[in-house]
Length: 340
Image 1 (cartoon, helix red, strand yellow):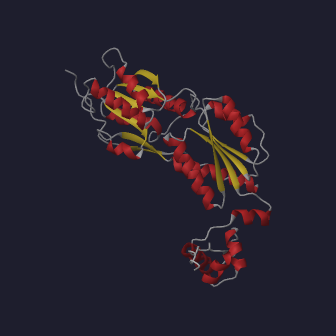
Image 2 (cartoon, rainbow, N blue to C red):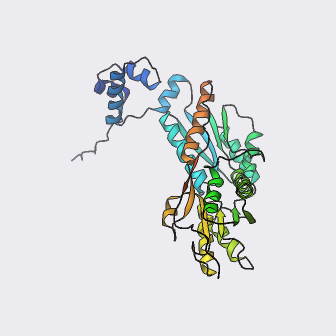
Image 3 (cartoon, rainbow, N blue to C red):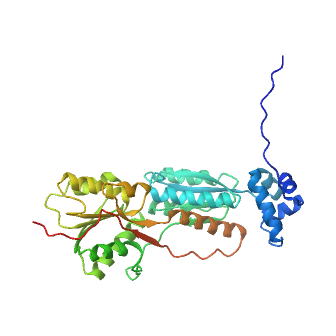
């Protein structure tokens, strides 16, 4: 007796899309290639058929037909951190929407030799381009000193100059202004690592805001983005805390700060206010819920892919929009209260 084999559903093709939409397969092909001379009603029918059938382009077949790869090597690092992880997520979505596949290569930022080996590995594949998502000096230097055979886009921050200003409603200026409005005058910044551009720029924003708002900085302590480093900064403080507000460089650091303050007998926000940066999903459920700065890392990833695709297509890249942030006020900040 021959057992019946389970049927395997065949992936949809452009011919299936054409049949359901009532158009020729050539029309579907032109639409997928971005051809604009298609009537709106026809475009809508094709788009509806693609959604209904779950059609996905066959990248291997397309590469054989066009002689052009649709794979992008993405160099990234520290994807356990919120920023790099969300940037990569946005890049992956943008690449997928454009019909490209991301090959993700994670770099070990603590091993220069391993960084070089990983970058050399990326150069061995048949690629349309290379996207480097860098937040540290080590990775940026390695990418900038490498010659790639395909278009490259290096998505990295640049160090702010002393003359660069931060809009009052943006960045750490918004955080410090919020604290100043609550009556705080003495503040401390728990910063990120020295070799991260983002950490250095947040220090510059903090220092500029302190001066402009007439506050007193009682110190800048470098951590490593972790809750452990935030905890250690407070737990190891030898004397009475000199500030009524602690500005953490990210939400995980703020989490450690809050725990250490509680263990030292300080109430948040009754005695001390604490702020973070990123607005991770858990920030609203800290105890107390965290006042923080919301950043759109996903948009940064999308914009980076758009910049690379423009280089691949040989067209002018779209202008990069200004980075915006949003202050999210929760219960970890409150008015200054006289100390007894």
